[in-house]
Length: 182
Image (tube, rainbow, N blue to C red; front, top):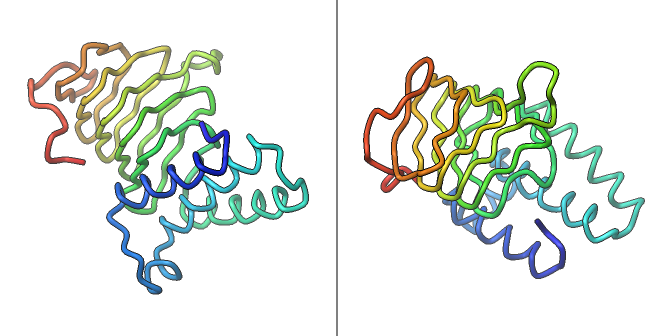
């Protein structure tokens, strides 16, 4: 969670590294995912550090516009540093979820709660890869270095980590971790 200006700068640096973004003018103006992530982190900083209320409202409006444009429903203070959104498209995340450092998320991912239990949301560890179309829901725990395959439906916990899971419902399909995917 961003609690200071130094945290804010660190999160931006880690997100930039995870996305593979360069310092070019072109990336700054035309990379919409990078724009969204910068806006997400700025809104987190302004909200958590109780900075300028007027500026926070302006950034919140910009954040909402970018979210709608790109198809993201990602609340603030859910992702730790090193977030990498592969490309724009539908991504829905419950605000009660917690996702660790260096997570890569692909299109059509849903990280949500069980019906009627909005507080019971997934807790995902560090260095996780979430493939396209994956659905994670309920009060589950996913361990560090876990790769979640495309279109997997994860409704139970895999707390050990260092595995690849996939299928409907998800099960361990390999002992290969996220090395080379992030």
